[in-house]
Image (cartoon, rainbow, N blue to C red; front, side, top):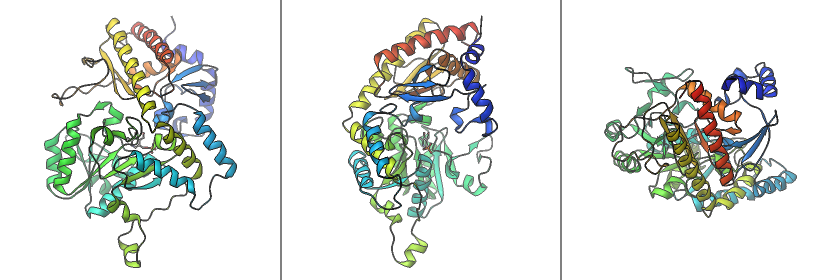
Length: 450
Ligand SMILES: Cc1ncc(COP(=O)(O)O)c(C=O)c1O
């Protein structure tokens, strides 16, 4: 009987060969941490709709979906046409262009707190700018963030604390940057209050559906606590809606909850599958990017060049994408399919008597295995309300790797132990994914992994 790993190697010889070549070019042979898959990742040569095709000729149902950028799936006709038309007219003017007005106009109409917009090239740049704005606006240094919440890879937002030492540590990050971070457990309102009490916190940054695009789901009432406590402390509240923006609703979590952040970070869906990010928020805060007199420019203004800010191709793709998702129907379609997927996975886990569950929010889903966690009551939404200290779901590295390879063997590409559903996935895709999941569970059972 071949193992999951052996089958993976047999099925993907061309990917293995390209990976061997890549090892001579890139650290670990990859260009993004999430693409690091052992013993080698798959190589993809084209994609359309909910599918992508690898270099070994396999058709895959895709749930990585451009790391969350492709709410409308691969090569959506409206986005393709907008980009094709723009590319004929040039890719970079080094000048203002009307398209950036159209793009920002969509952002302003859809995102409730977007009084002003500033485009960046990525989500990482957006969180970096948000923190800088908050520090300049408040004149304070400290940033509060939450354990396991991900905000990209800039110095302000990386580093982990290794108990009993509570100071975050991270290779290559200046001590001063780490000392300016206060990392608080998600849902711990008392710890948040205590962190804010000293009056030196510029901002609190949060993934508003919970750590790592909702892998650890966030209780909605905690968002209200964060809003109230930051206001009382004179600190700003930054929503990192890089994943949730335009996805959970046209206006993101702030539309769903009615809780207004001071600053919001956007990327991914914003640019319709091309590179792009944005910082949006209160006019008085974003006005720190305005030019003024010499004294202001030297001492108070935040400079912001950036070669690819609001570049024409991203502006074209982003405007086209936002125009399609503005009515909320694609989000609803993707969320309905995601619910169906999780409910199906939970039924299969139950039938196979595997401990763990699938859960999600909107069109984002996660799978935990090996921990005795009760499945969500409705088979989809994890309800933490009333038990915020409950066990955090997770998955061991061994199971994670087997799940990823096993699902690829069966024609499905997950993003780690979860993924993102697009508006162009179909019921048939979900059913085929469930069949692949059932077979993968059986494969894992044979190897005593579940
Ligand atoms: C919540 C969140 N913030 C920020 C980022 C960083 O965005 P980017 O990869 O565009 O730099 C990510 C990326 O996945 C993210 O998930």
